[in-house]
Length: 485
Image (tube, rainbow, N blue to C red; front, side):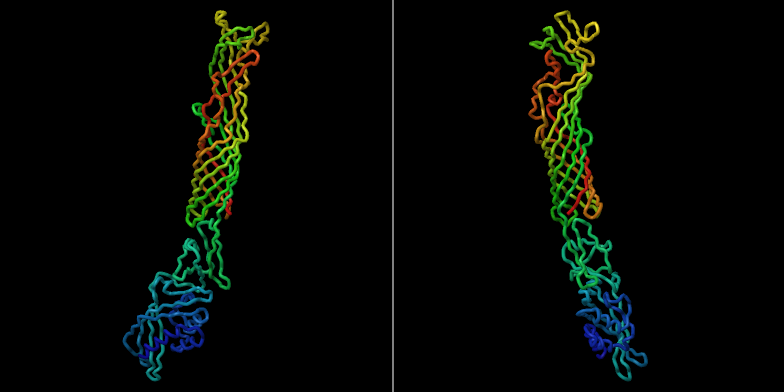
């Protein structure tokens, strides 16, 4: 009975909060210098500790300790000449707060395991004093003893559970705290979260996090078309183009790895298209005021070795698109974009048609007389512009300009790589398709390729006008630098 009463006092005095209670605790032992099993959490890394140091640590660094002793059993009484002895067995758990306000619970830390304690109680046969002769213990847990120097994180938001401490994810206990090594290194997989580590004032190692996610994006960029930039319908493909500008975007709040954003921007688009034909034969019968200088009708023949024309355009381009970003790691992510490109034509320049051709005339009324070059003693007389390799440089009366407003659709993919904290390298590619005909409204009813009058000379039809449909269709590559704020 005296032994069980001693264990009861051990249980009561273990909740010591001052040195008077500590003195009562130490009086339970044979000596305050004797070494006992150390079940203190976070106050000492030693497996055994003196009774004096045990009491001092708990009073000096523990706050409001709650000690639970349960499942008490005892063995048989035996003696060692001077003392009667009995071994008392029980389970023990501890709960207290350290000086930084960190809650320390052996049940929480060791995931439900109790300390298994064996106390050897002795009674002196002469003085009948009952005291603790030894304390041994163990705990059935794979978790290593909490070091004397440690830190803790106070849970404040769901993002906290994704924070890494020394490359390990934080695990919070029922007190919303996570115990971590001293001087921890905290990282978060998503730099967009803009995590700030806060140390609680007046504490050595109690931390919390504040997240201020970045939602806005600015991206100067350059986009270059690969291969042909325009589709000419039955006329094939050709041209080239590029644009440069700045995109602005907003990223919707998200705590996951997938982020959705909407972007727009302003860009200057510069493009050109070239048309050429060669090896073309063309002829027509003159009539009605378009005869030669003598008023004779004839059949006018052309054999073109080349016909060329180019169009240059400058547009204000306004993209509007959805951006879906998937973060693979802290330093890089991949994305998909889908949207529209709005083109407002600022200027367009259509060059003259340039051609080289052999030109001759056949006069059926004179026995199919053929006139095919200059004549006279020194070949100085040019008759009806007949001749070999004649250079033609003129446009028809039909003028043209590109449609003032057109819309293209596009879909693209890319990758973003972190350069420094708020700046990313953005590289991607996209497929672009125009929905509208650039030369819609152009009068292409005229069918003649070329015509000639004595007074006005050659008139070549614009090759651009001969196209039924022109629209953008290309693959682009783009390179930019994105700033997050």
